[in-house]
Image (tube, rainbow over all chains, first blue to last red; front, side, top):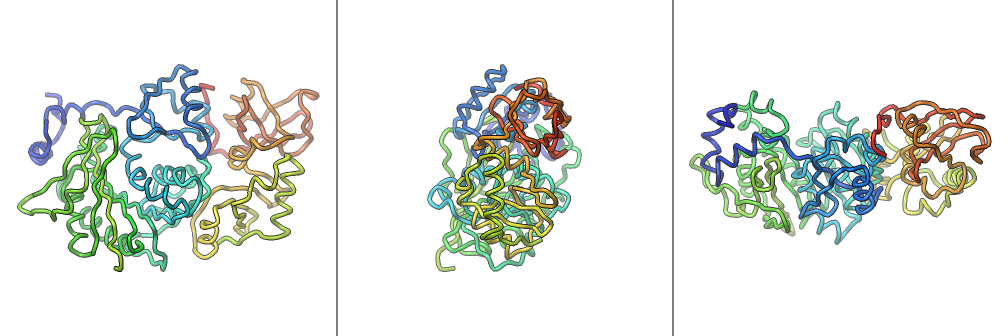
Length: 312
Length: 155
């Protein structure tokens, strides 16, 4: 069987949740297609595509994002465009959370955004590009050692609207309130199995429970830094309901908020898990979305768009 | 660190340097604040980012704009963004030299092959501003930061 190296417990956990376990395992065993996005702060999409094709590099469009491309080439990292910061190599699903803020950014490009877990800065630089270097992004990461890579990427991509800070977001003291917050939370990373096989080796259910606890603390603190009517995107790259629907369910019981249905043209999203280990999740959590690896040939992902109720 | 805003005459002097040396119009930088980290490093930031960096302790920010510890020097990061507005002291190099430059090597240029004067120059290839070099006679010292240097195969 193709999925010989996937732990039994992992299979028991997720087989009942996926529509087609065979396709699911097959996707997990395939290497992840390479993707990149054009950095519109420094370059035009059409010109970059034309130049790359001039080198013989195929750049296939992605239905839901005009700046993103699939490429079968392993030479994309040694192009002039990469040196110049005209492209950024980034997994496709990792480009999704910033897309959920696109509408808000277009309505107010001078807004303030908090990227709570920013390293290595892929989503930060993408938001910066969507904002056209206007407004302010506070890019936080608790890992001191990973701040350097954020700085490197900001400089390379020509970002001018990002300040990097170093806090444990749960204890981040500030009077500021943000228009938008991205919480791309640390998670058990099951969805990244296709690029990192090591995940299988250290996979265990206890880690999921302790990460869910951390995520509950993070989402509550982030929510409190949101302006009334502000929007928070919560995302993870894991399948575990405890870290996804469970975290949203917790926030919905603790704070006054609602979820917005996610609809990205050209992307196949799936319904959330309604019930898990005897617990039924709040109805509102059904507006979040799951991305299964075999549906769009990507990594696995979870996305939620949360709005803080006015007057809170 | 906290940053302090570069205002009035000091800001004007910086923009004047860029205009005199490279012919970049000061109007190019309208909309961005220049901020000083107190160690001779100047950053170009959006207004809201500049305000935040003046009030809060930050670990880093972008875009590094100029260095003022010693002679004024534009950063490679800044030249990659604004270099296309330059009208002089732009040194276009050949394909083989561009490869060497991106890998971090210093270059030798033939005298009379360009119209640049000694000092900081913008190194370009095929219209792309690759970064900053220091021209002294026939030598170009490579000013690309080490983290930016890489082997480029397709260009």
